[in-house]
Length: 171
Length: 454
Image (cartoon, rainbow over all chains, first blue to last red; front, side, top):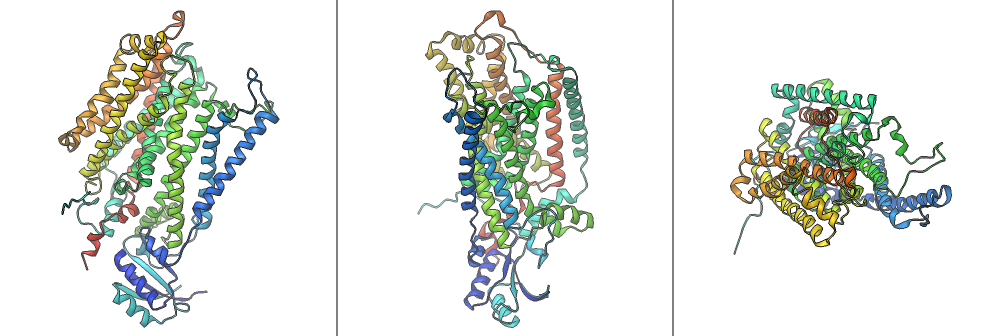
């Protein structure tokens, strides 16, 4: 179902941040911001938080336990080999392979997590409110129903803070 | 009050965002240049020769090489270590400089990462083919099998190497690819033809540049960056333990891991310098890869060269100081003098002496000089690996098994082939992929350049 959206276009990060501040000071709800490069302040303004690093730490911790258990199982339980009477659980020499396999696991799991959470995957159907946002424009998107203000109010606020263009679009 | 600008603008020419996109994707939009076609023809010829030599090896066996009972590791391991070393630069460049927040990396990291992926791919050919029966290479995977199940030796540096390099290849390739996703989206949204839009659209994985995507993208970059920094150090440390855990004179030393890691970064940075000079010259990207960038790489190379010189000196000193006659023989009679003394001195001159020229600002700002020095360093690093591998093996404890080693045409052709494969990869990269990270470069435009307009 399509809805009416209001799109604010900015030429620079500096203007974008002023525009976001202006809109939020008037309690206008921003739906999403599209930028040609990562703008941390924009993510903060929308209170976007990521638990990516926590997830990566959990993957790493699980991998360490998993790999060490696997090594113990192969070397001690499944197929113990007697190297001149040395202990079969040769823990110190397991450290390097554990480190490397942990890195491998964290890499694969992080890529998978990124793909799922950011919804970036081959063949994905996407929609861009304004195609210039991957080039040189900073786009602020408002849903007319939930923004908490009308087109005129949003347009005047954004333009007062440096927006180069404000328009409505149905999608 | 003392006031100095730490670093000038990273991008010259007062560009705006649109100009940056246009400049960087121009090589993709323009016609294929003539020099590119010539270079590709040469590279394909070299790769074909290499593939023939690989076929010959598989068809007739390792007996077609000059390796023997004493020098069991010849050019193949030298070339393996050399390529892995070159492959270190991409990640070293991208990741160390990313976690150290060095913004000047943005113009160079993409090319360095591309180089890493191709170089590690070339490196992987050598241990696989050295197995002899390459069709049994899958035996090295630790999976429940019908051979017992007999597990691989998890305590062997050779197995660590296999896992480390596989992880390195995966992490470098994914770091490189996901770095390109926003740039593919830029190309997609500016494409004028349907085919181009479809191809780059597919490559862009539906990227839109929303805050949700950028947030996770940044998370992924830092997680991969953080763990890859550990991996860079551990991969080459592990390669060095392939040597250092043996009891061969000249190899049995605790100096090896840092010596190998620094050496790898040295050769990689030199290769980055070579590539960046080519890119900036042939694609007119002087505004992005500025003299200041090359100057910075030059300074890093001088610093690493000093470490290399210290390592060479330390090895020789420790062989004398240990009083071990076998170590002393290897260093004083089989490296500094003897059959392979040329390799030793070539290594010292290329890696420890010639790079010192870059102390001079005049040399660091002379592009031709930098290009030549970067090639010399890569040659020197090849000599270093020859020096390590062959001299220690040719004459060890038992004089009756002493021998000399020089490669056969098959070994030389395999090496040429990998250079061809690497060049093909790099040329495709030049032609179809944005050579500079568009979104990252946009983020380092000086704030003043934008705000001045208001």
